[in-house]
Length: 278
Ligand code: ATR
Image 1: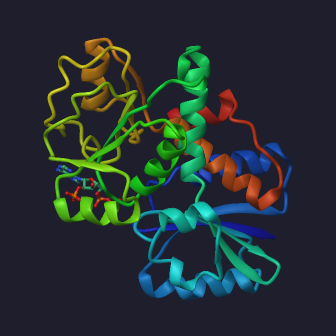
Image 2: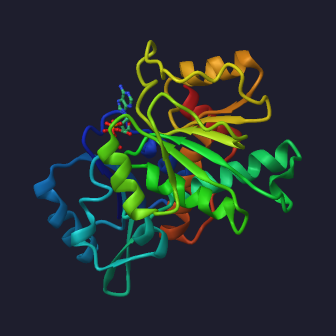
C-alpha cells in the first residue's frame, strides 16, 4: 500500500484528502491512499524517517510546519529554497526532497486568468505592479510568483503588513519588495491586489484599506477559499473589479504535488471542483 499524508495542526478541515483520493481513484492507483495526520513539532523527525523507510510515499505539509520542517529535509528544490517554505515531500533516490508547489500553483492560476480574459499580461507591457497584503507563511510563495511576472519590467511588488517586524523579515528574503504602511495602498496602478492574510476567514472580518477609487482593471485575488467570497472580494466585485478566490490555487498546488509523486498530471475537472464545493 502506498500511503500519502497531509500533516498540519489543525488538520481536521483539510480538503487535500478529498482531492487526492479522487485523483487516486480516477487514475486507478488502487494501491494508494491519502490521509490526514494531526502533527506536533516533535513528530516531524519521525515523519521524515517514515518517508525514508518508505512507510509513507509522499507528504503535503501545511500550516504551521512549512518552514519548521526544513531542517529535517535532505534537499530543497529551488523554489522551496527561495521561499524557505515546503509543502510537498518526496523520496528521490535515498534523499527526502522538499518542494514548494504553492508558487507554481498561484502562477498558473494568474496565467489562466489572463489567458481567459485575453488580456495583456502575456505580452510585453512596460511595467507590472502588484500589491500584497500580509507577510505570513504563504506570502514568500506569492512574492516569488509575482517576481516572475514582473520579470525584467521596472514593476514593483508592494507589501503591506500589520506587524512591521514581519514585513521586515520578508524584505530580508526579498530585498526588492517595497514596504508600505498597513492601511495605506500604492498610488500607482497595480495589476493585482492579493490578500495573503487570514483576515476574511471569519465572515465579519474586514481589511481596513480604502480601495474605493481603484482602477477597475485591477484584479482582486484572495487566497482564502472558505468562505468563497470574503468581504475583500465582495467589495471589489461591487466596485466592478474582477475577483478570484483561493480555490483554483489550492487545486493547482495539489495537481503539482500529485505529479511529483506519481508522474501523472491529474486533470482539474468539474467533478473535483464539485467535491470542494459540497
Ligand atoms: P501564518 O501561520 O501563515 O503566518 P497567520 O499568523 O494567521 O498565518 O498570519 C498570516 C498573515 O495574516 C500575517 O501577515 C498576519 O499579520 P501579522 O504579521 O501582523 O500578524 C495577518 N493577519 C492576521 N490577522 C490579522 C488582522 N486581524 N489584521 C491584519 N493582519 C492580520
